[in-house]
Image 1: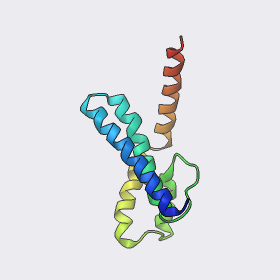
Image 2: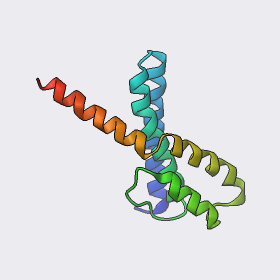
Image 3: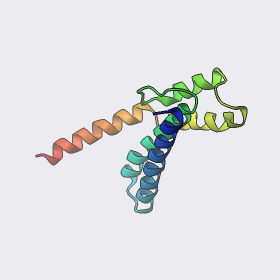
Length: 113
């Protein structure tokens, strides 16, 4: 997969999760909105990273975005947008991903009782 293809794929993923999160908010499903908001931001960040190089396995793309900014890998007109995306990725970063996964495993275990 080329960088552009990976970026397009990640962007579609981000848009799908974002749409689900919006629906969750409209229906008052606050926990589900968080469950969908985190991968929306993570995939958006990975889409941006795919435009400047290969994206490794990470649930903390904010670190990689900031590194790419320091290295000057984004065009000047995108720097502010990428900084904002990095902030959002930090806010909904790996700790949120891990909490959501742990909660999901607990819910699965309860559902099997």
